[in-house]
Length: 296
Image (cartoon, rainbow, N blue to C red; front, side, top):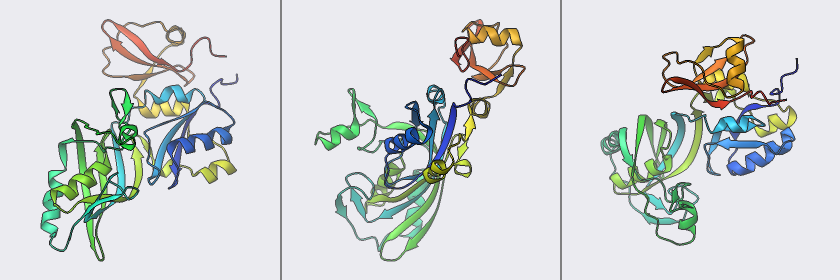
């Protein structure tokens, strides 16, 4: 029996520098021959690395793939602040970094590690009164973004001193953390300014650079990184269901509760995942039906 979801799933792309996330989606539409392509977790044009894209019905899965943590490699340059907190913006101030000691850098990074309150970068996709912050900023409007709680699990780094003071770092952080804002805040804490000059995302939740494909590779050999079933069982714990329960969930019906915590991937006897389910009161209800009974 042919799987109607054979062409649906997730593609983990190693995004190249200079492309927007939307540019990547446009390329993937041509490569896979479908308009049904979307992405999760935008990367700035200067950034490279893991960009998770959904193909066909995989696009509907993206909204549920909320990665709790991410890992980045980055280089922060001290001594200059910019309008965008990265190398693409205009320099707004410069300062002499000769007096910045390793001890001061260590103290500043410690201050930015753990549970912190962070003001996102002005040129971010955060919405303020219904408009994107970056759209307001580029229109010359004053943008006041409230601080948000984020977690920097680890901030490993080395300092390079030469013409500039550069900090090469590996940051493991919660979703919603802006690495550009870390660069800005580090520079402000040291009173010399700072901005990103390189950023590479190594991991988004369970998806890593190890399984990512370049656009060139995909053009030569279009292939999903993970099928729908693989993505669902990678992202959530599995709940085995009977064939009768499988068919009920495919119709959006609820089952009796099992005492489960959190979302689970309901997998039938044939190994295919029918839906994501979560206990809601006295019901085990679907939050996303991967294989609805109407699917042909």
